[in-house]
Amino acid sequence: CEPLSVSMAGAGRYTFTTKAASSEAVRALSFLESAVTRANDSWEDGAETAVKSGTTTSANDASEVYANATNDGLGRTSTSILQPSLNVGLIGDVANGKSTLIRSMTGKRTQAHSSEQREHGKTIRLGFANCAIVHCQDHVNCDVYSFLPEDEDLPRRPPPPCCRCGGAMEFSRRISFIDCPGHAELMSTMLGGASAFDAVLFAAAANLRCPTTQAKQHLDALSFSGILPRKGNVAIVQTKAELLFKPDETTKLSAAERLERHATEARKALRCTVAAGAPFFPTCAPLKLGLEPLARWLAHIPTQDKTVAEVGSNGLNVLRSFDVNHPGKSYDEVVGGVIGGTISGAGTFKTGDLLEIRPGLVVSTASTRKKKKENEEPFVVRSLECRCKGIMSGKMDLQQATSGGLIAIRTTLCPSLCAANRLVGSVVGPRGTLPPVWGPCLFLDRMSFVSIISLDHTERLDPSKSLKEGAKVRCHSGSASVLGHVVRVSRSRGKLEVHLHAPLCAHQGANAAIEAAVGEKTGAFHLVAHARVFGGTCCLEGSKIAQEEHHPVPKYTGEEKENDEKDR
Image 1 (tube, rainbow, N blue to C red):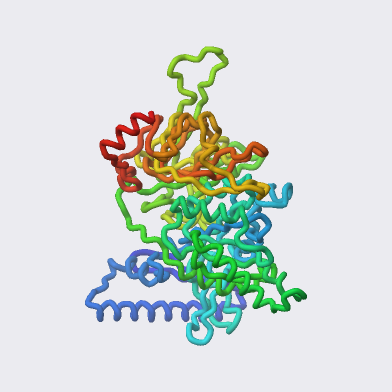
Image 2: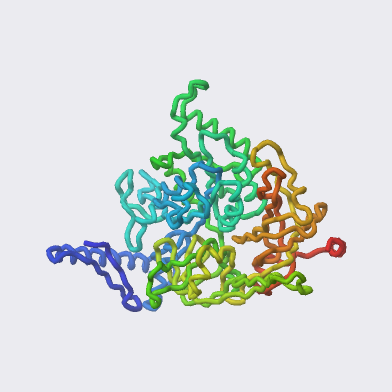
């Protein structure tokens, strides 16, 4: 028989169906009778429990009882079980095995929908993959945790039996992975993906020192930005552990001793970072060894408490946008563009909702005239509106989505607006609930500098010298990355004024990361400072409700206001 299918036939009424060959009709009927008997027994047990607890159950409460019976133990009912509840970022240096580790857990290559692997052989853009964590129901004798690849995680189908005892497995949670590039030149890509992190796996090759210079910058970016909701959400994965099993003629240490020495040295080097006190997990990703302790750790990370709040507290940061229509498709079969990202804050997106996208449509007003008009703005901004036509997470179709894992929303937008990641960095939400759009002038305060080392690792650079009048910078807030140049800076007061070349949608008081060209030799962009959005030229006004719930407007004393006026 095929797996059992259950559908609602009315209040308190459910239909059980299955498919089988005509020769197996008797066995299929017996299978259905057994399923109905088990369902009735579970229903009676639930009713007895409700009576003992002092509550009563009626036929009108059938849907509520059914939702409670299908609760997955994480506070989510059956309508949200299919959506991942956690976003896990993979960071680390180049060629430390991040993409290989994700593929061993999810069964998916994160560059599956782009040509970067075929053309470059490395991660250039953000990569995404989902998987489920399953747990053996024999908590006493077995208690095994394992990853269930995305292709095997199908709706209405139980997980495969336990790999150790052969017993039944149960779903623990579903998670989304974000694969970030490790190259120094692609730091802006990592900062855009970090806005969605709930937890971090720091990949460190067991045959190299930890952390490397570039990996240290990734950790510094997380430390200063305050992205992670709580401590204890970082783990170090010792990838390529199989390379240490080759005998070491110098130290005469075993592979286990060399792994422990690598972890001890890393703990000392990471004491002042966001990874201080993080657990270590040695793995061999190609052979899928060492993944069970990692699955156990991910299964027990607490989900961030996000209660249902007022309208305006929810928004989706766009990490990727694309056109799913292939060439030669008939015009009547063309569907709207797709945007992908994660919902921040409380709130729910449903199929059919009217959504607003900011900054939206940006039109440059640059003219070919030698003399520009006085007070002429470099661009004009107009927000976009669309309908939500469908929601997906991996291969799962959802009717609604809340804060948690990565989702993709099919819209009514023209596909050309979403093609080639044109909407990356935008914020999506119900109309009238989004933050303001700033540009071309942006004020930043509470600026703190980051210690950096040159790309050739030969010298330590002073980041404050790179922020001078006219210097090119990149401002990051949320998933947005906007180019600009410095107008004026006050290092003593930690204030910075930037002229943006494109609009930026962010709350007043939101964290911002600043990259600048450092060094006369290369002129490459480095992460130099972190700051907070204070104000600027407002292209589109934001929702006051959203502003108060996300980031209260900064308050300053009279003396600070006078200093601001002097700086400006």
